[in-house]
Amino acid sequence: MLKTLQKPLFQNLFNIGLLILVLIPLLALACYNHPSPVDDYCYIDTVFKYGYFEAMNFYYTGWTGRYFGILMNHSNPLILKWPGGFKLLSFLLILGLAGSLFALVKEVFPKWSRLGALGLVGGLLFLFILKIASIAEAFYWMAAFVTYTVPNALTIYWLVVMLRWYQLPKGILKNFTSVLAGFLVFAVIGCSETNLTIMVLLVAGWWGYQLVINRTWDWFAVFLVAVAAFSCYIFFTSPGNLLRMSGNPEGRNIPFSALQSIKLLARLSIEWMTRTPLLVFTILWIAVLPKIFVNGQTIRYFSVPLWAAALAYFGILFVQVFPSYYGIGIEPAPRVINSIYLYFLIGWFYCLAVLVRYFYQTDFFGAKNWYLPPSIKLVLAILIVVSALFSQNFRMVYGDWLRGRAAAYDSELKQRYAYIENTPGDRVYVEPLKARPQSLFLDDANPDPKHWWAKCMGGYFGKKEVVLKTNP
Image 1: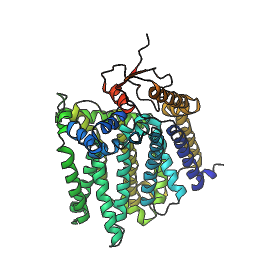
Image 2: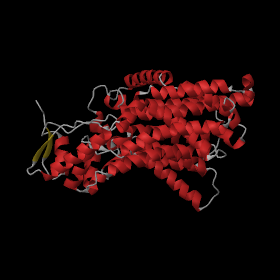
Image 3: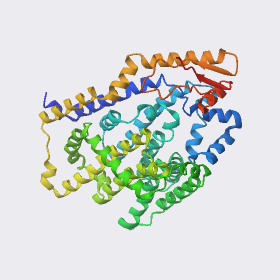
Image 4: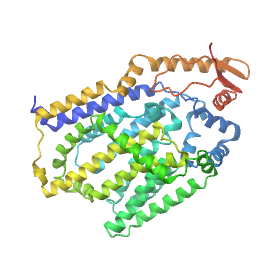
């Protein structure tokens, strides 16, 4: 049995098992998803009142410069009177994020089989879901996932497109790839401040790396810098941004924002390293890397100065935290922490590979002959399984699905929609939801008739307000 653990097939199947363990409940829960009273109805109510383009202009000039996020939110399925479309969107989003990671792994490790690539994706997604700050905000609340999870997936696809561009011969396909890379930069920057800072850092960092380290004037990198600059101009000239950033006296305080950002990153990093099996996966990753580095085509992606990799890693994490403190003076929301954690994991394993590559080339501590006994692998595999059993997130998603909480939530909301449509009058009072699966539920309707959630939901259903009953 212990010898079986040494076979790549078994190790890949184990990791694919982790992938299945993650994807099945998330995809199942997507089938019970619904629009949230928090924002989802308001975007479409604005469209119904002012028209599609005027509604987007209203948000751009009055609230935020997130031009691409505004576009996606104002195009949500409610515009077609199709609440069921939220189920499909969440389903596709989950597969899309997994697909982006798979595409990146296959691009970096082209000699790997699909089974091996899926195995690595399984390990990453397992760690991600194990400690993600908010399942609902990552995959099921549209107002959040179009401004964070979607651009995160697009950024990963952008990395794939970038790597592919440098391998293509001159021609139509390479030109099309350039346009695609530029569009992805434009789209990601227009989703949120967090993703804007990530993309700007990646684009500017790559251009600087080509210029300073490789001593090359890279016209493709210059083109991407120009696209990023144009996108930032559209984003920051939005009058809505100025209104949002002026709401907190602690906002726009650089020393305060920088210090708080570093403190939060330190706390989160310690938590992720000690409350997940990250160190277990780290040991397994170190053991497999020397075998990977035998391939010369693969090792080139990790042949960068360690200081450059570490600086980029810290920078990508820091710029995700900083805008929250600088813009509004408060700690990032769970949906931002989700994003930070995703890049924390990707950057962790990449920087580790850069370090081990250095050890491998210098044969530091006999790195070329590093070996992990089967008995140790068995113990590590058991620790991974145990971590899933004690994970609050896994218990939540499986409980919401298998114990019927998600199905009851779905049924209650369908009954609520029918009740609202069939009740005469401009104001409709609805009962509070009894089923509140935490992986799907964000908030209920509002009891205040003057609150914008009540007015937005009412406008969607052709009423003035939909108000939550306050039972004594």
